[in-house]
Image 1 (cartoon, rainbow, N blue to C red):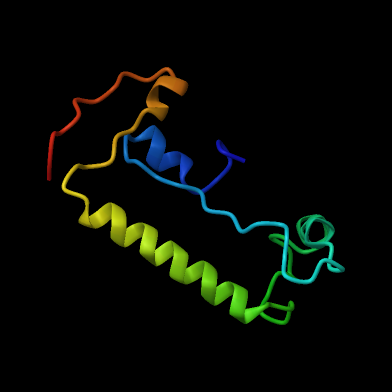
Image 2: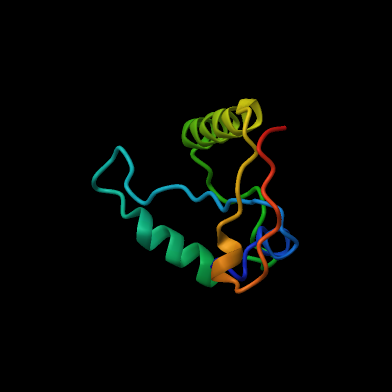
Length: 101
């Protein structure tokens, strides 16, 4: 998923990026979220049926959005710019790291 995600071109260009993913364990233990994701990816992802008629658990989507916003705010407010250690993984030269913004 790392090299196929939307974040990969940013990483390749030297821009720190994340791929955030929701978990597979919900509040209802009877619901198999992993199986639901497999079904979605197999039968709907990037297909005509991948639209807003698919069921969405809005409270969970809202919580995910809040967590994402808090993460972004935390990184943006930090006086030290985020590093990009993944360039070593990609075997790309490391850019000079700035001490602060």
